[in-house]
Amino acid sequence: MPQINALIDAYIDANLLLLFAFLVGVVARALIGRTRLKQEFSLQLGLTEGLIVAAALCPLLALALTKANAWLYPSYTMNLTDIAVAQFLDGRMSMDAVTFESILTARQSFVDHLAQLETWWAIALAGLFAAGFAFAVGKTLQSVLQLKQLIRYSYVWRRFGKLDIRLSDSISVPFSTRGLKRRHIVLPSGMLAEPEALRIALAHELQHMRRRDVEWEMMLTLLQPLFFWNPAFGLWKRSLERLRELACDQALLRRRRVTPRGYADCLLNVCRRSIDASSSFNLVTPRVPLLSTHGVGQRNFRVLQQRISVLSESGAAQIQTTRSFWLSLSMLGLICVLAVSAFQKRGDWSQDRLMLSTVVNLERLKSRNTMSGFVGY
Image 1 (cartoon, rainbow, N blue to C red):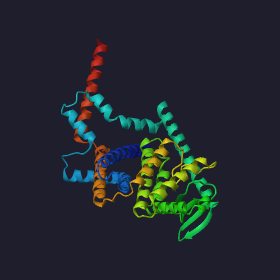
Image 2 (tube, rainbow, N blue to C red):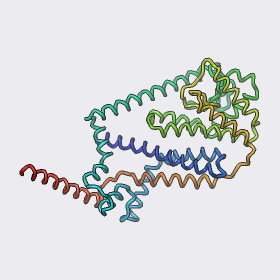
Image 3 (cartoon, rainbow, N blue to C red):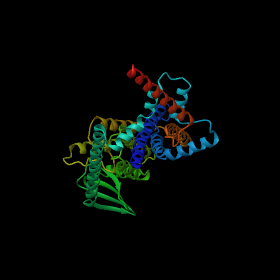
Image 4 (spheres, rainbow, N blue to C red):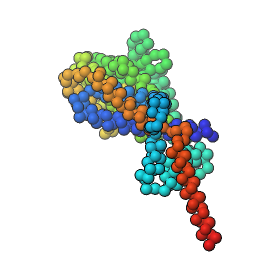
């Protein structure tokens, strides 16, 4: 039973950290949008990816920070629960001790009920999670198997080292993906008759491979069943997809590999073919397409509009962002580490917590004696 409680606790912590890190990223991008770096999409993409890595490392860094704080400044605490208890004992909160303690222990009570499955709502919640998780896993497996089958029945057109360039009659949008040993760029067969579009699509997908975008997409796809219900995960994934495409477009244009007009025409033609295609490969899969066509709607068209808008501004000079990147990432990572340290569950009780427990017991004893007096009367 303790192992189940610890597992549920860790899962709740992971979701709260994901939500907090996502909000930090949103605020950071909003602030960047007010500076001259607002069009530096590679910087924004790097910060978003770096924040994800920082969030994954946060528990270990927060533990180290908490240990260092306890060793260097034993009289000071970073834990919000201990701070709240100290404020309550100092009389700065107008609340009785029993109510205050019930608020502090609400999460632990929730975890205990969920682990024991003794209430109807705990059984219903566990059932809903299990059904959602199973559905998400099934959908991911279906997509991966479909992707594997598509790769198997495509034709190898060119082979360079561990990279295969393949042709398929089953798709309308070029994309890149990989297996355990080989990488793949899959192109619609009809693109052979369009040399300029073929060159742009290859340059685009090679840029994605250069940035390890395929590996990022694979990792997020595998994690999706765990966080299927968390809106922060879906929003973060879509934000990464948008920034990934904008950064890729910008990198190619700045290297003068393609012209803005030719790039825009290629995107529009691919979009038109994907809408007209009778069979489209639209399942969410670990792949990076030239143009997202999954669930074609207003959101995808807004992204396409933004990409074409960025193409028209391709003449803007590149700003050196190395120092800004590392400074911003360090600040964002520090914010997440401090937040995790503040909300970290204490392994032992502080003196203030013991004092609060004593006050709660005295209040309960007083209430019980009062009720006994009424009964005797």
